[in-house]
Image (cartoon, rainbow, N blue to C red):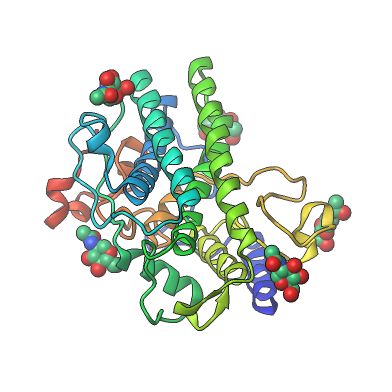
Length: 321
Ligand SMILES: *[C@@H]1O[C@H](CO)[C@@H](O)[C@H](O)[C@H]1NC(C)=O
Ligand SMILES: *[C@@H]1O[C@H](CO)[C@@H](O)[C@H](O)[C@H]1NC(C)=O
Ligand SMILES: *[C@@H]1O[C@H](CO)[C@@H](O)[C@H](O)[C@H]1NC(C)=O
Ligand SMILES: *[C@@H]1O[C@H](CO)[C@@H](O)[C@H](O)[C@H]1NC(C)=O
Ligand SMILES: *[C@@H]1O[C@H](CO)[C@@H](O)[C@H](O)[C@H]1NC(C)=O
């Protein structure tokens, strides 16, 4: 708990003094990107929707998006490393439903706007283990495997819909058109529901210990993941674990934190740049890696990439669209 305080205090200090710029020169915490359209904004969200679709569908059913709808990915490369997870029956049903919901979300965006190709997704056990190791600050032993059991799958899932949720909250104020606002409001509703369910399931397991990290509790591990995302996002506190000090709880009256929210209990927002920093794991929207090793697709993600970033073995995987 003490480390949590320290990290949070540090983050507050950093965010109030205009944190040190990323190595490539500028750091934006503003969602006001010039010359970006509503369609660019929903296309950006598709990167996250593809990531969730593949992780949930493969984890619950053993089959990826292409098995359900062969055209939605628009020729984007198959994801790497996703596989059927060893889930208990209730968790499997829940995750299966979430996976189908993601297909619906992708279809909704594609039907309204045409959509973008699926980016290359790194859903390997090694990539999840790498993010978890960084969050905890030690190497897992045995290696963390998101597909090994329900608890690990839920911990890995903690990483994903929440980022989508904050992205939708961040993008809605900039939208112009009625039909796109209506679409994104609907996406936000289900996305936040998914996050609430995942966090509730984890909350029930808050005292379980994770052997891969020397017996750290589930609650503590969620704090560590949230801290990592706050560090990578570099725009202050936008993320909180399942158990918090009272000054971060609702109305300063509780330490349970099933839903992460600001002092008014309103959802946090994140910009596209923050989301790229978090999903790349590099803390830099110009440096792809992590879940999207060849970068996100669509105009917003690509505008931060120099041509030379995606030469080499990413050439076959990308489409600026
Ligand atoms: C976004 O930037 C444009 C151009 O700089 C400016 O006119 C507009 O007021 C800004 N909008 C917000 C919500 O900050
Ligand atoms: C795949 O999704 C697209 C977009 O909604 C839809 O037009 C198409 O019919 C779907 N294909 C299948 C096999 O469901
Ligand atoms: C996926 O992530 C793992 C762990 O970081 C890495 O070793 C592997 O090279 C990545 N795969 C791709 C295609 O980027
Ligand atoms: C977790 O442990 C704490 C402290 O021992 C206890 O107060 C709490 O009820 C436990 N929570 C659950 C969900 O078991
Ligand atoms: C909760 O505590 C924080 C920090 O001490 C303070 O800024 C905030 O106003 C308090 N909120 C309420 C509802 O009292």
